[in-house]
Image (tube, rainbow, N blue to C red; front, side):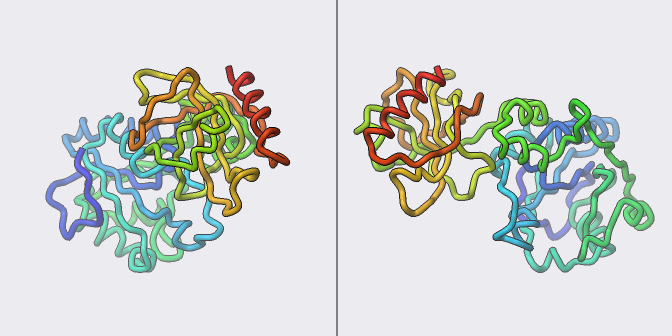
Length: 298
């Protein structure tokens, strides 16, 4: 899969394209990617995805932007699995945000990306002030065949990133899994921590987070990337008992595992929420609760 960072100056070959943020790559997104691959094969075009970083809502309202469901690497891995041949990651900045809808079609979709077939959601909006819609696309894109993707419903609920975030915030991992088509996962590289867990008898793998996660609490988890699939218990949040700065951290105590794996990339799969985060009066109380959480996770 070819990765292009930034919009190319000019298209080098025609593509079948879909456009979106694809946060979480839920079942609605998966249906779009499958349809993209199918059409690209029929039309003998390169299946391509245009996505954005940062998320447009992070650009317009950074402090109120929703938490991300997936990293850019996570999205790229999902695109590859669906046979996408080219991914263009456009930086969403003031220049792109101010581009009017007509110019977005002519300059970006046609001129820079070489779009010949385009798949978008029924509620797709684009251009300055979100003025462009499906009707404008079909009127203006004379050289592009435009197809709209119908809403994908799971158990009578629309599959959307917002619905997944809501499920995760409520600790409803089963609902999130239905919408995603897989368990919710977070990935990262194991980093050095304060070694407090080891002192308490529960050595943890620490994954510092750059952004606020879409869920928090204590969870039963499965861990991939440690010589097979391992089971454990994870704390995701700001660690109110031992930390004052409030920076989010994912800490995983892996059962029957005590190897040094600093720098290794692991994937943490959330299976069940045990409880919310809580503050404890002292480390003895925290240790007793960690032991109880480990037993409950097992």
